[in-house]
Image (cartoon, rainbow, N blue to C red; front, top):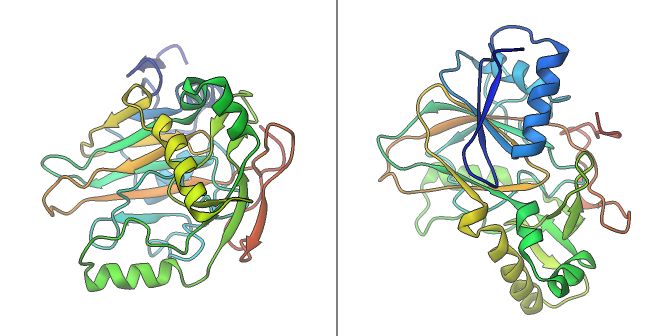
Length: 299
């Protein structure tokens, strides 16, 4: 434990963790330190990791029970929880939190670099709690009162001329339609922080018109993506990035001229979001029981 160090990357989000052997079974003290670092910094990174898919699943399990790879997209062959984030089939070039169209989105997401690009291809991660704190009080009060419907059935990060592989991926992605209703402001169950819980899957606000929803979501999102709130992570081979999906958003930058890029993702089951007045999210459409257990209590 004495060799574990945490080095901040920016004042608001991100840290590099060193001195942890990810191929070994950690002590309870090490796991507690990693969880504390994630609570504080929202995203933690590891260099020069020697992990395969099973190793990534094992490290992710230090933070809780794993989800399936995705509600609709199949797992990497030979695994149950690994999703290939591959530039051939999908480019997540839109701000989002993972799988918010289910009632209990993952509380932790992990990304491991498999194929990196000679330049570009960064992952941006934003601190949604800092975004909420940046808003003036009247906007905070408004956001506190609102709920949003999140769905997978929309033109998510669609390129102008999708390839056959991309069209096939998109068809699988929306093969079952899911909708969930979440508070626009979510209370983090461990830190008590309030964070803006919106992003690309949030398509409309409950009780408002499409145009009204679009304008307000644009305003809220503008606080999330302020440069001060964003970590820009440049990928090298054999890196692992872990972030708190409950209180961050992320964006994969498509600036690498068509070079192949692949990350493998493993996510950890989350709790049902809670609003500032104590109400909980609900599933509107789609059965998600095959995808994720529900984290009932914070650990």
